[in-house]
Structure formats: structure tokens, C-alpha cells
Amino acid sequence: MIRIKARAPTRRLLSPGLPTAWGSVAITYKLACPLAQQNGLGARIVTSAVFFAVGTGLIVHVRRTLLRELRQMRKVAGAAQSVLLRPLPPRLDGLGVAAAQLSADRGAAIGGDLYEAIATEHGVRVVMGDVRGHGLAALGTVAAVLGSFREAAHDEPELAGVLRRLERALARHLRERARAEHPSSCRDPDNPVAEEFVTVLLLEIGRDGQVSALNCGHPWPYRLGGHGVEPLAHTEPLPPLGPFPLPADLTAAPRGELRPGESLVLYTDGAEDARDARGRFFSLPEVLAEAARAPAISPQTILRKVFAALLHHTRGTPTDDVAVLILRNERQRAKCSEPSRGAGLCRYAAPPRGRDQPPQPAADDASLAAPP
Image (cartoon, rainbow, N blue to C red):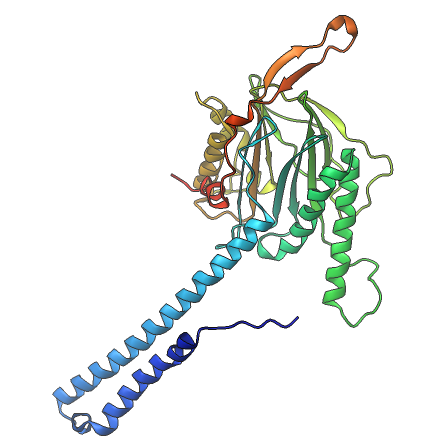
């Protein structure tokens, strides 16, 4: 691919013009000014002042040029990152949503963690994942997994089908990456990236609040409610995607009901693996229990408390990417089916659409992680 970038003629002329002008002033003074030929103290002071001014001007010019380029690069990177890990709306099908990600690479808005929540005809489907490694090197794998999920979440009637689509997309991405890294080989590598893997958690929350899940090596989310804070499940997850194939018999397991007022907190292992200066791990359940005792609880307030406590624990320098996604059931309980009919299920209705708020920009989600 050939890219042609046009630049303004004036800027192209002025960019080398200022250093040349400063250099011309210094050379002209040294060669043509009689004062520069004298050896007296006063002449030396003036000469030093002239060259000091010339050097300062050059440094200021270079600094301004670098800052301008840095601002432009950050603007482009921010636009690309917001497309890849796009901000979630504050409400999806009656579920309150809040999410944020903190990259271990300074200056990067995203890293090796991924999340997405989509309202489909099958229910609200959510993915939370963690690519091996962290920072900008994992962005290609994040893009492959998220792109596949955003299509499969609508197309696949079963959650198992979504997971198999993610597995195929990851395998295809790793083969293409291995082929690009070793272009001399004309054959597809048998094991393109042996150590590459992705932990993936898939959730499906139906209209009746029933939760189904498939977990490949990811931490189970926490459930917040009147019972306190507890993991959604205690079973061992499947192996992460990548090193091992999925089992032939794959079925999403039911994980209970998310009742109105209850919340699910999805996170990556960077949250619980974060350490302070003494090597102590971050206690996510304690922070969630404290946040659940707040008088006005919402996904946004929980998210703020988690990231504020995390940044305080690590003194603002986490060593791994951290992503947190919170889902709160804000649906209104509708009528239950008659027990005599054998159903015994309660359905929930979403709040009126007039109460929905417009999606917040990516900067608002990132600001939730900022300490007060």
C-alpha cells in the first residue's frame, strides 16, 4: 500500500527555515561583527549571550515541533482506540452498564484486555477477555476477537456457537500473523504461535434474568446483591482459547438469575493480581462490598470506587492491564406465570426508552478510573 500525505507548503518551508535563520545569525555574528573578534571580558560576555540565545531558540523550536507531532499522534491513536474498544451505552435492554479499561502502557488507552456488551434477540450477550501479554502488542488479537464477537453475537442462536466462532477467528488471526512474521515460508505453519492464548468469558442474560455462561480460563465475575458479594460460579473453567481445541460437546451452563437490583462485576486478572509496595494483592471483593453498602448504588459509582481504590493500592502504576465491566439489572418486575400451569417463571420489563441516556464518549469511561 502506498500512502501519500500532503503537507501545507507554508509549514514545510517554515519548519527548516527557523533553525537556518538562527544558525545564520550566529555565523554572521562570529564572522562579521567586530565585537566577536575582541578578547576582552565584555566581548566574551556578549558573544556567550548571543550563542546562548541561538541555542535556546533552537531548543524551543524543536520542542514545539515535537509537541505538535505528539498531539497529532495522540489524536489519531485515540480515534483508533475508541473504534476498537468502543464506549458502551449506559443502558442495554434494561441493564445498567458501566465499563472502563486501564492500560499498563503509559499513554495508551487500551491494551490486551477486551470487553463488549450487545443487546440481541437472544438476550444481552457479553464478552470479557484477556490476551496474553499487555499493552499495544496485543491490539491485533483484541481486534480479531472483538470483531468476531460483534457479528457472532447476533448470528448464533446458541452461546456455544459464539465461542466456536471466536476460536476460529483467533486461529485465523494467529496463522496470518505467523505468515507475516515468516514470509519466506509458503506454507501455513502447523503451530503458528504456540504460546499465544486468550481467556474468554461469555455471558447471556435473558429477558427473564436467567444467566448462562461459558468460561475459557477467565476469572468468574462477582454478583452483588442483598446476599453480599459472591462469585457467579465455583466450577473450574475450560482452558483458554488457543493452546487446546474446544470440546466437541459444548453447552452454556445456567448460572442462576440476576434479580432486579443485583449487579454482575466482570473483570480481568490484572485487578486481583495488582500489588502494592509491600507485595500485597488488591482485594477486589472487599472494595465491592464497601461499594455495595453505598446509599445510591449504580454501575458508575461502583466503577469509580473500584478504580480509585486500585490506583491508590498500586500508587498509580499498575503492572498489568485492568478492565472492569459492571451490569446491573434495572428492569421492573412484571407478573409471574401461574404456578398451576407449571411454568413458575417471572419476567422483567425494561424501563421506558425515554429514560435511556445517550451513550457517553470514550473519555467519560476513561475518566472513571481517575483518582479523585
